Image (cartoon, rainbow, N blue to C red; front, top):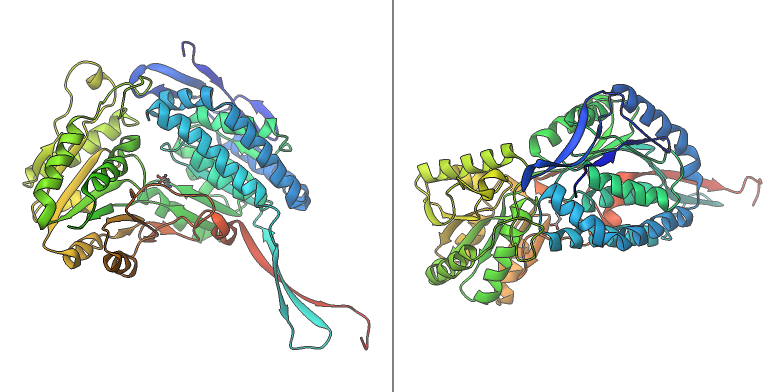
Length: 489
Ligand code: UN1
């Protein structure tokens, strides 16, 4: 990629410059001097236009048969799939995950679009008997109207797809603000939907920084807002929505534990913990950031894990043999390193990593070494705080009961992974771990589009995403007391 790709906003079916006058650009976090894409940011006036366009398109789109709405998504899925070889590398350069993961994410976006598109031909409500003669009670579903969609950097095309696809199939129109660091992949998804025949105004894309996202969440004429990102921003959006009577769905932080019990298949557990902690450079809300190992296997397990982490190749995500790319920004790198330094000051034991790169391309790019720290009981911060980077905090447990209690020791409850071949222990984990997503013998990250996704405890607010759960947020019920209207029948 030599010249930056030119970006525009999509408002009312037209691609146009933002009127904000400020530049919205993404840089390559592996080589920050390289601008990946650039355009003019949207301003408050553009947001007004986008909401007006989305409102104007809402009535017709909501009356378009669900089958036709779904067909647009199925066609968009084909466009995205065909472009994976091109957009995957763009994603790797804009976000920093490896090329293979990036191509995988583009294909995942296609899968999500196809699932929701095909699921449009579903039953559309329920019928209840009535206590009155000659009457039926129908519980039908209506779209919310105009939905604000605010998406994070870490899955620049898959998370937008998993919010926008159900928003659209359920008959809503959308005003979308992607993270300022990844406008190019947002543009690609919008292009795919336009190519697939989405009518004008049904999806509006605004590029720029967080101010536009905040402005979306402060409008009373947006009917619902769906957000994925940090806990602080999610709570502000939810508070702002509550003040204005706007529904909010917020997917936020995680401090997800992997629990490895003495009877686990060690090779499998090491592979999965590595994947959970270090794929996407640890930048997933579902990433494994805490590891609890029982004493009987701890020494062997940690020494094998340490060797495997040492062997991970950190480097440019576009190179074939890279395992870990950079994190998204210099600020992210700094705050992750600060979290590591604090843990070391508090007495954590360094198993591997932890020392910032100080020269060469790993220092110029926003690289953070994959790090595993064993915590003593007085190193509380790293056990509690989400760093959103390639850092794994480890503790040992005397037995399975203590291990599950340690896993539960978090204000968050997004995901967890438990490694055991003992069915009784696996069932105990199902009973005791209060999480939205539980993986038994697989990594803590990963989610399919046909089943609910969302966090327990402080990880999420509002209804879950995906599968049937999605309709709880993107529609409301309308209960119809239905009689024929002719007296005596
Ligand atoms: C995954 O685990 O593959 O922001 C998806 C996130 C989550 C999605 C995780 N909302 O990382």
